[in-house]
Length: 126
Image 1 (cartoon, rainbow, N blue to C red):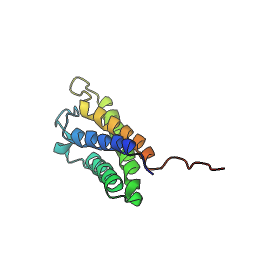
Image 2: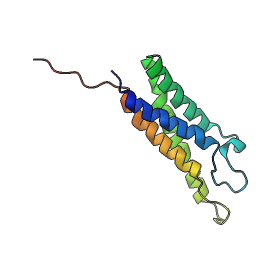
Image 3: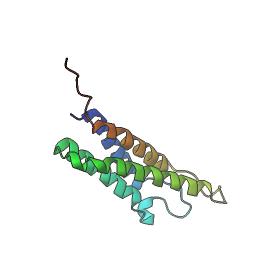
């Protein structure tokens, strides 16, 4: 038995990551990752959304491993983009945009949502 509320949390995290692909990252030259053709976050969002739909809608438990993989990939990528922007020498041109925070929060929500894959502990009958 899976907890569909937690899978809903993972789905919301995937949607946040999908929205963040087109959001403002604060790069000095380009506005979004869509302009840079960085497909890591887009891939992680698709992995999370596909995993939630396959598990909750179709009942395919074996596909559920894509949810934490997508969450960890997005979290690592978001932290790496944040570190890259904070290390730029001229901070007047670079600012951390809202899309980086959406990626990090979406990755955390996807990781939290993976706890919905396992069922409740079995009841002990005496």
